[in-house]
Image (cartoon, rainbow, N blue to C red):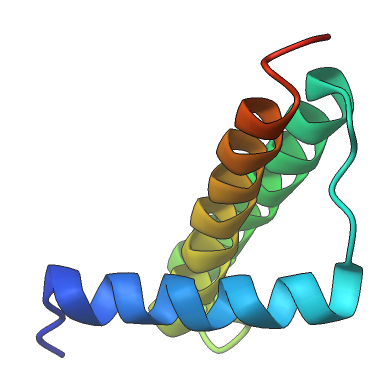
Length: 88
């Protein structure tokens, strides 16, 4: 599957819009925001491990979806900390 940067960003922007609708407000403080990013990174690592070591459990497409969620949470963190002036 050939994926361009534009394709990947499109996936991120679509998921960003969905995340805003489903999850609403992002935490005001960066510590909780970073914890959400870390949780998503953990899910990405888990998906990669399962795709590699447990054939049939998950695929690289599953890992890719988790990577999109990592990007979305990082983007939400960046927006939220800019809106609060980076205050802790």
